[in-house]
Image 1 (cartoon, rainbow, N blue to C red):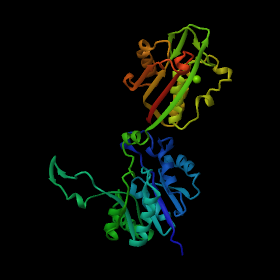
Image 2: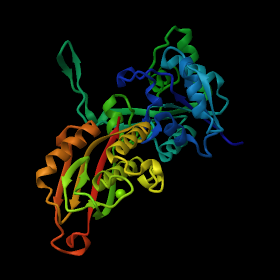
Image 3: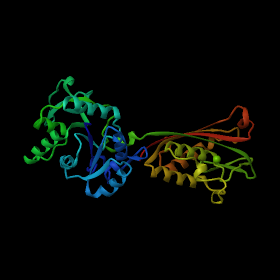
Length: 375
Ligand code: MG
C-alpha cells in the first residue's frame, strides 16, 4: 500500500520580528505572497495533503490562497506554534507528516523528497545544515564555552515523522502541560528517541526580519527607448527637465525618451508588460501626456507587486543638445519621483562620435537599468 504524506505548514504566526503590521507570510516576495511560494513548493505528486495552520484573523485570506491548491486546506492554529501543529496533527490522515515553517518559501523538491525518504528509512528526517559560524554559550555577558563546531547543526524544516509517533509526542507533551516547543525535533527526541538528521539547504532560509524580505526579492530590469527629432518646438524633455533644443522629439506623449526607458526597466524588473501596453500611443488620454505623470502610475504598479526601486542607472546617447549641465537637475527630479537619494540615481550622457542615426543628430536613444527590492 502506498505510504501517504501530509505537509503541515505553520502559518499562524504574527511575524512580529519582521516588524510588519500583518502576517509576514502574506507579504509578497518577488510579487507573490510568501505562503503561496511555500504552498507551491509542496504541490507535487508525492504529497497527498497540505494542512495550513492559520490564525482566526488570517483564515479568510489564507483560505483564498489555498483555493489554487486542491490538496490544501486550512486548519485553525493555536496561540503557540506547538498548539497549531498539534491541531493540525490531529486532523492529518496521512502516514507521514512533514512539519514546515510557512516562512521558508525557498525549500526545494529535492530537500522535501530527501526528508520523506529519511522518514521511510530511519523513522524520521530533520533537515539541517552544518554550522559555519562559531557558536558560543554565554551567560551574563560572559562567554562560557565554545562547543566543537563539527558537532553543531542549524536545524531547518521540513521535519518529517510518522504521524502516529509525532502525534504521540505532542499528546504526551500537552498532557504534561508543555505547550511551548518551537521545534518538533526536540519534542520528538524527548518522547520518541533521537531523530535522524537529513540534508537541508543553505537557500532554505527562514524569512524572519524585514531585511530578509528585502534581499530575498532583489530584481534587476532593463529598458531602452529611441525618439526622433522633428517636432516644432525649441526644447526636449528628459526626466521631466526642459532642455533647449533646435527641435523637439516626435512622440504621442511629451517625448521624454529617458523616462520611457526608465519606465520599461521598472516594469520589466517586476515582470510586468511594457509601457506600450499600459499607455497605448493611439489612446487620446496619453496625447502630450507628462511622462513623469505616467512614471507615477508605473511606480504604483510596481508597488502593487511588492517592489520599490533601490537604484537606477541611465545612459543617454545624444549628439545634441549637450546635456552635461542638466544632469544634476535630471538626477534630482528622478530622485524625488522615485523617493530615492540622488546618489542612487546615475545618469550619464555621451555622443555617438558621428556614427549612425544618433551621430547624425536624428534622434536620441536611452538605456536604463534598475534594481528593485522588496518594499
Ligand atoms: Mg517612447
